[in-house]
Length: 294
Image 1: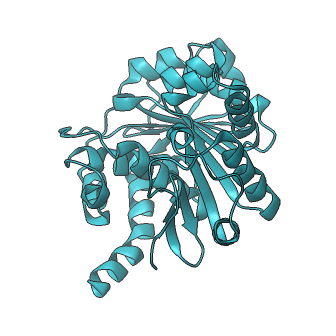
Image 2 (image 1 turned 30 degrees about the horizontal axis):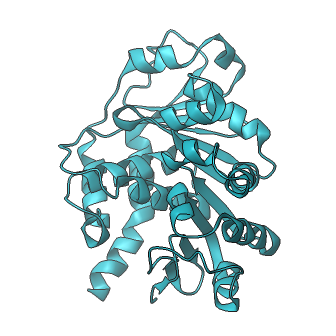
């Protein structure tokens, strides 16, 4: 599967693997999607855009890619990143494209700070629920909380997974690695807590290396990290995160303990070892194929 490069978007293709629209720094002259780009979007399972794409592609073209993906049934992932704040007060075209991405993406990914910037709500759960409620196609809103872990919010409930403790060398590439793992779970219809567990592990494993590109975490490193089971359990943090309003939600949290130690008694604990066993079983086949092909 050969990569296809045309800009700053990452596409998980059904037939051609990963495609990334980014070879040159700016494409201001591009006014419409080429047939080649349309073909790759149509063959893809996920079209990913982040806020930095606006530095390379015209906002109108990004809107066109979104609209075409929706038309052909390709799922759209959007991570506004730090750029989201400036896009919200940018040109009319940028504001319109940002609004469309927030409403019509299937999956939104933001840090807790970015979610607060987009909604004005400090509590990441409340901010995520606000973004979800305003979405037309939005199925998942994922809030990344750094060393604490991540939260995945849907219309039917909330899933949470603490992060893995690692010796951080470089955070370059962690965000993109995290998104790729989320896309893997999404495409394979994995349970939500399992998807977050893989994503946290991939992001953490990438942080133990230096640089992005070929230096991001490989599958063997991710699996090794999960087996080590060095989870950053922080009961106080999760207890404070869920306020009174969360009592109405179905909340699932990954935990090393099956005993509920939280003040909030509406949490459904999922045993970490059980999840890891199931995730590792899922990943063993790709690993075997990787070893055989090397």
